[in-house]
Image (tube, rainbow, N blue to C red):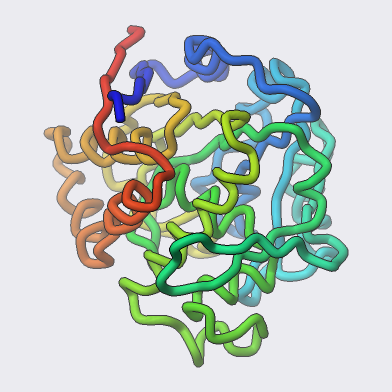
Length: 294
């Protein structure tokens, strides 16, 4: 496999998100789903909808999300739709909770070791392409969150998320904690789920990671740590493995005094295993060329 191209700029602006996407040289076909993280109620670090306006308008996209599998402000459609209004997403975009109503779409896992299927919201079939617009940061369970997490946990329905977190043991939200998989199985299940979404859309996927507000915690945390290091920049690629690897490499290369705190979170959860597994499963390559557009 040839090297993947990853475009990068240090200057984090809404306009530069569009500039890096345009550098990819693709035009996403059909109705475009734009997968974002809506931000848990109380979270201070998530990227606000106003920041996303130029990019979403550039692809004439619809903001898509799926319900969570843990208690909070997003685990039912009613609560999630209210949060999308409260956080301002519904004020400026068309918003689609893809698993608002069942039945889920069941995507088979090819060559999976941990889970046999991935369940995604049925509305994903309404879209011809998807832009994965990720806030790259730490994560209390996965170590970090980027493009691969958005493809997997992000696109999975409520039941699909339980399936991933329990390593295929259950689809019942009540089992989310009691039957949670061992860490490496959880990470591998995420990679297996990501593979199904990559296969679903084929070449009609693009990825933008915005490495800012770099907390060790995810936007899914109602009580999250404040960012521990300075912003890094914007990355764009057609390869989800390469873009996440490039973000990890940029954190490691930083001389910011908060870098070690973020790396400790990533390493303590064996977070980069999802990158290795996704590469092995054919989602992309870790071998990339970084093209700086500053």
